[in-house]
Length: 194
Image 1 (cartoon, rainbow, N blue to C red):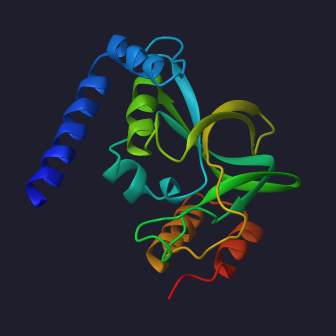
Image 2: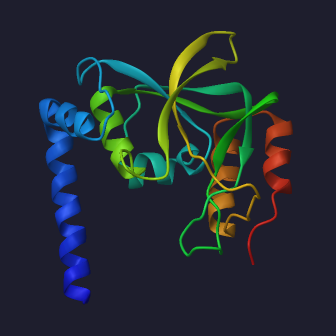
């Protein structure tokens, strides 16, 4: 049984590696999953991180992303939620954003290439996972507004609790990138799972 699980993981890693190395194969893979992949692999895009990807250990080290630029970002009309089932199920809840006209979410805008975006998508389970890539308008501290990729999931009606390790990544990443004090306070009020 363990051998089959290992073989399945190895096959997924091999498939992901192939998809991220070829822009043509990436486009075909997305089309097969009923998603469109526009532009060229070298085109620049913005990605809005509001969860663990704000932390360098998650974004730069684990996902091996090398952003060309980063900025503090504010997404109006959304609220931060912890309404997803993490692993282990029921004991941790990853971050999600949910449409709410009177709310805002602070995070980090990273500028990456479309080819890096494909690799990031695969690391987040896109296509086919719980998140769906969504383009949103995010403002920076200078008043500039950019279209940025964000990950959004349907999620449950009730919020759960993130693990202590996970909420620490959010808190430390937000502090390291200079997010506003009220946002840091909001993250510090989140009660982690036991």
